[in-house]
Image (cartoon, rainbow, N blue to C red; front, side, top):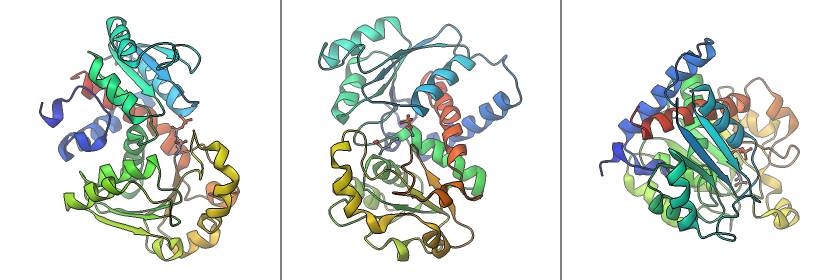
Length: 309
Ligand code: CP
Ligand code: NVA
């Protein structure tokens, strides 16, 4: 199938640049409409969405559920104890049963293979709401936020400071489709997946840098981005990681080194006092709440694209 007509939204890099940019354009149009108070636009009228959560969530759950309902649809929350995918019931069966009731499935899971299996066995579109490997809806929302603040996404210098995790993989996958200057500053031993780095590099359109020197890396950044040091599923490593990541805290001095044009971004939830100081997250150039808001608009546009609307 052509990249613009794929069934599922699992990796940004499954799509071409034109499709990604048109989804972002749609997101900003529908955002403007919803913010104007217009409630007559109901493209999801008569549609239902099943939302599978194997992990906790605030933003993903509320933005998907609210967004789907504002555009006329009905969303069903299935929490970690409800269907217990992979425990109570095989993922393949969950995919096929939910496809018989719903027009779309959104899922947040641990193993990336689970979202791939859902996509393979569901007959309706599957949207990735975070796996241990990536978080594409977050990075689409972030891209929209960058366009709103900087005026364009192409060529932006994004310096991520912290763990080479699912957020980093999503940035790398975006960088394999849209030209970026993406820098990941992480401690040795916490680098992102090598194959994903290679994929972004071999696409040949972005400048991709890995370093363990965040202070040097942030210089001239358009965006300094951070995320928790221990992701969901790694919480037993919290104290070990706090030691390893000590010098990777984004604080006022690091933002100073970045320069006056740098915005601070974080996917949230944040552990203030660890990966970022209170002062940085509360500063006027912190755009974390717009990122959170934009989750809803980016996802609405992603779903409209999958429905061919
Ligand atoms: N950023 C994000 O996905 O937040 P939640 O974990 O609250 O959904
Ligand atoms: N890396 C974090 C992102 C949370 C939105 C996690 O996976 O827990």
